[in-house]
Amino acid sequence: MTIRIQTRSPVDGSVYVERALADASQIESALAAAERAQLAWRRVDLADRVQALEGLVAAFVADKAAIAEELTWQMGRPRSQTPGEVGGFEHRARTMLSLAPSALADVVPPNKMGFERFIRREPLGVVLCLAPWNYPYLCAVNAVIPALAAGNAVVLKHSDQTPLCAERIVAAGQAAGLPSGLLQFLHCSHPQVADIIRDPRIDFVAFTGSVEGGRAVSAAASQRFIGLGLELGGKDPAYVRADADLDHAIPNLVEGVCFNSGQSCCGVERIYVHEDVYDQVVEGYVAQVKGYRLGNPLDPQVDLGPLVRDRAADHVRQQIRQAIALGARGLVDPGHFPAHSDTGAYLAPQVLVDVNHDMDLMREETFGPAVGIMKVGSDEEAIDLMNESRFGLTASLWTEDLDEAQALGDRLQTGTVFMNRCDYLDPELAWVGVKDSGRGCTLSSMGFESLTRPKSFHLRQL
Image (tube, rainbow, N blue to C red; front, side):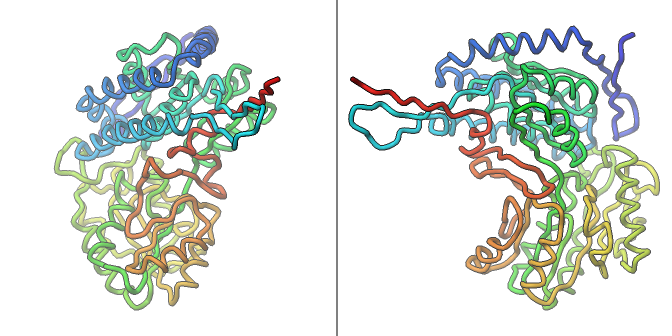
């Protein structure tokens, strides 16, 4: 009996996509084809690999409108925002391809008489990319394009919520004429993924998802000596100093919390504000968030859509209820947003004050359009609270003082320090997490290092 998956759209609860799971023979065929294709692909000149991947990017972008529409239906992001993910895919892909020649070049130590010495970066083999639903293209491109550029083959598995995204990327590769078997997708279950990770033909796993998912991937790979790239959760803090430009900080913080309905691993999830500007920030934040429009994401006027599933919205509701039970105050009346419901995926944004670190809202991932704003009396207090977390993906500082931002940033336990911006990936900078936010590095020239292995050539001339 064929097992099928269904993607229920958060837009209206209907079944938008239905696909059959791969069976054992299809998985075996895919891995065998990937292994064969990679052996030939690694011998292709780097310039030719880059040119072929440029063709993939062009083919992908050509379907921008259809891809954006599908994405809205699959995971609920407003139609006004989904084209940006296609543009982000293109920007990151082209940036990584531009970095490939220098990042993958031989490393040559100083000349030594009578010897030819260099370090060559070799591809690993077959890379398994496990991509999430919240940014299915942006997270996938971080691994897919540099892995292929480096000479690897890629097997792509997307979340059951966004299966069409894997199909779109592979179709773009086929349109660009990539060799058969080099870039494939599989729709499969969690137990099947674990079996694939244990297969000796898989040489690296790039996973983006929850902390629990990262533990499952690590457990499946625990008997093998293969590399893992794990981009996991976040509880990213922001600190508004007394000297911050509030006209700039407030709208950007609201967007950092609410964009994609708060479903971003690097979105702002807790805000600390110096007491000198606390009242102004809270008042400005509440006024700004009330300007958002919650509703059907297919409406081009809507900028806040549903959460991906009912249970995701219920998780946010539970955090809000717990915080209020422990003394917090909610400042936004959900009734201001007619599309809000006490059940289901449509959830009004919320800001809470009188919060503390006894509340899950300030400690555990929210992944929704709700945030706590906490008053602090000094930079010292802010840094201590920002670091008081099991996560460490990004942190943002809102200040006019560049020197202080750098000094405070040195003390933050995080992978990326922002000043006067948030919730953004620069593909020329390394993307990393610390603590439970994961391990490994993507993007920048450093993003190629985990997708290759160094081979030293030590050649003596007689």
